[in-house]
View (tube, rainbow, N blue to C red):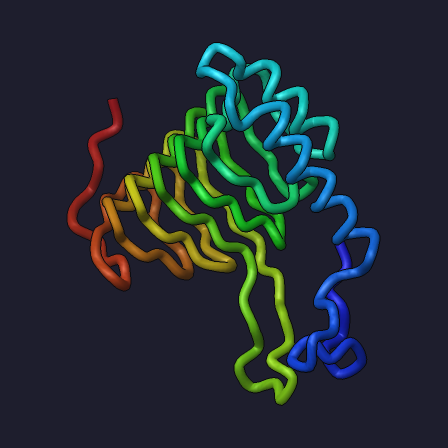
Length: 186
């Protein structure tokens, strides 16, 4: 995916932020998901996995993106075995978003791998990857920001906001997310 140089493409004046190829792929993807997946019941997980793979996502067996979730650019999504993206989740995958084994991203959460350079006169768009370790849980309506690293087994509580690094096997809540206590691994 190519983010265009804002000095040349002038998005503040209506110019594009992404290459034509990227915009066409995303337009096709939106249509395919709406017609082929957005209406499907939970049991159609293999079908949705296949559609995501057709657009470049790396989806392990047993991973699932629920029908009402929205994936911005599938080629930047990596999901290990048993990882689940729940209903209504927004996967803003401008940069790579990687979910380890048995990760759960609960309903309404937002994984945002894009931001802007606020010091740039053109407000340049920037992609920063997100990595979520195995057995982590992103609770309902939580926000995971650009460049976040969520450690193995970490929990980001409901409506919490995570930037930076969250330690493994630790429970976080709040905005910004603060550690509450260690999580017991079973």
